[in-house]
Image (cartoon, rainbow, N blue to C red; front, side, top):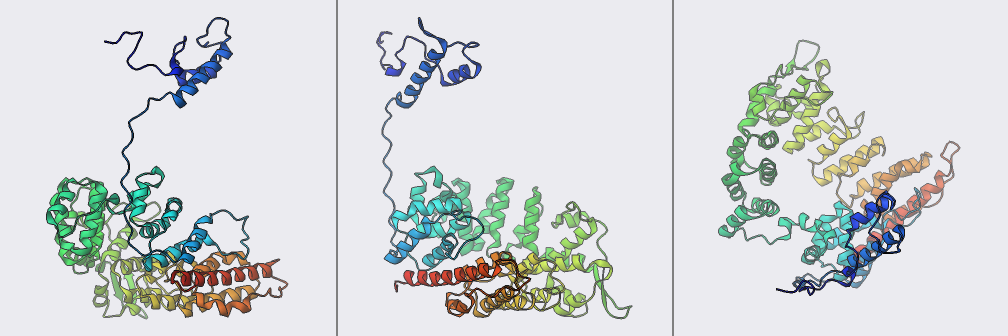
Length: 548
């Protein structure tokens, strides 16, 4: 046994003192209370304040240098190889420029004529991913830093950065989001054909791995994913059941109905609600038929007046059967109970059944009917939600109405948000044509949210409608900053080929007497930035194609 005077592990130089070792927290407490109330340990002839400072100095040295050497950490495995082709040199330089730009570097509301490089990065990443390029290794830290600050960039950044981004994320706590965002937390998933490996991961894997496995299986063999989920359903936690159930949206089919019917009796209300929503998206399901009967009993055509009118009789109560089928009994604040229940019934009822229930009328004819007693907004809003849930383009067209219709958007579109969701059920070209017609008839004041539903780059008719509307606003002397959001969208979404036809808009116009002061200069500056950005976007694409 070692002698006490000669310990097996010698003390660090910082601890070999005549005074006792004092914790840092004790020193801080003494400093806060004052040395008069709590004097430190002092040697002969030493004053308390000086002794406290000496103690703090020694403690600081001990904290910085007094650690025992630790065993060397295991050297990390080499980064995986990325076999994708390298970026063309010009495109790699462009990426470095885009990543070097930082948000908030401007000097206020006036942006000048320079393109906003931060807003061009998502588009550059999408184009690079579409061409299958690998990220330059030296750009990976900056890419991960950019994605850490902007969640909207993460899918594109991780796709472009490839497996090396996950390798780096395991070495840097700041980039751990990449592991959470990657399927299975960055772990390799088994081949869906390897039944034993699939079952082992499902039974033993982490939650993120199980979610990723279920999503992968659902995309390839929906029935296998459902059967795997059914086996362990009773033992899963409620929050996990909800996440797993949500994966069934992919490939949802009639074969999922028995499992979803069982989920209607789940002990978690959120699980029951999600199961009911999925069943209502299957127009042939038993739940959809039950909802059709309930909703049909609430809406009828009255022929007793001068013309046909829709009359509504909202349900008087939310009975147990309705609650079992996913109807939430308690309305949110400010909503009446009966209108709340009615909306849920109509939303879940198959849209295809309304024609037979309402005299063989088409969706356009049904939506055009007047609705008695102020129920039109509630009824049409529920039909809007049903059209979005069931992806019914015919009903969406009826509810949107003609883009040039009075009050901008047809009888059923009760809000811009509803219109935007309805547009999402239409094919890309039809969607863009509708928004172009809307802008031509009503201008840009309500178009921002609708434009966000259109694919990039905008088709030529939509691009021309936006530019024409901006030009009309400029000629009218409107405040240019009122259109900054649409102008920003145009910079990112207009076809770069449109840059040439904008040259006529670059001159500063003669200002009208009733125009906002300085508006002409602002408009010329904004159009100059638009043209410069479009030309830069065209250059970016040629660089990625290796033709620059």
